[in-house]
Length: 70
Image (cartoon, rainbow, N blue to C red; front, side, top):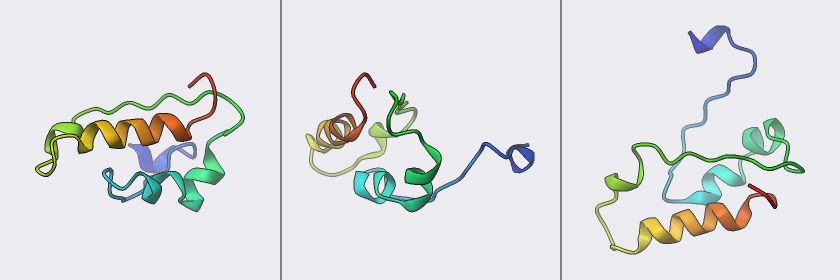
């Protein structure tokens, strides 16, 4: 269904490496970084099997890198 939507992009990346998403050319090109951006962490954080505080660190990194008002 999304194949026919010219406004949809897909990126395979490591959620627990925020830079792999936030610094990707596809992401940088298709989001308006001058306006607030909403990020939904749906069915993601509970998959982490490592250090207990890592999900909070990942969330903080996304929040820190998003435009003001996000």
